[in-house]
Length: 254
Image 1 (cartoon, rainbow, N blue to C red):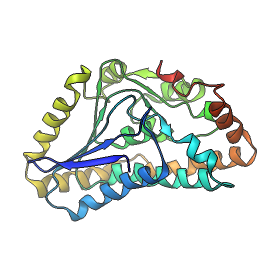
Image 2: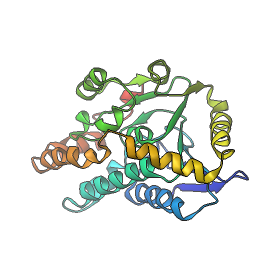
Image 3: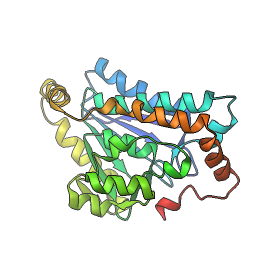
């Protein structure tokens, strides 16, 4: 397990992704995020959540090596189910989720950040959705909560990233701070939430879910196209090229 958890004195649940070298999430860890966040509804002592990572990368996406090592379509099916559950769990978590992006945020990372209540990032962090280069689709709905609609289309087609500073200008990243100050700032933000009456904050989160017009379950619709591409062989071609070193998974972050 590479998802570490701890709870502060204020009741803030801190979840830290830790899977070197670039925090590409295996299926079990992606599912673990969903289970931990779903469990918050039964933990009244939890006042807020911080989701972050350690090392290089907030999240580079799914673990392609794991996916390609699994027989038949087991890998792609497992990944897509786990991602759908994790994104939903972040979005529907009973308390606000603060996403502290420490380094490049790609693919699955976009799904997590785009589902969160509040996003902050370290200076110079890049956000990108290189799914087309991976022969797949997914998380455009979540990217749409971070960037304007026309820029979303460009990012999806081109796989070009956008900076945290630009997202802050667009108002979707609350704050951009030096990397060494990221967790202090995340804890400060979560602390403000934790200082409020817990039942009221939980009610406020539920109320926001009820008035949100974005269809966050559309990730499963997007994955229908990923399945088609995979059955046609395009997905395997792209992932095998990555494993052969013909395409740099972190090119979007450079």
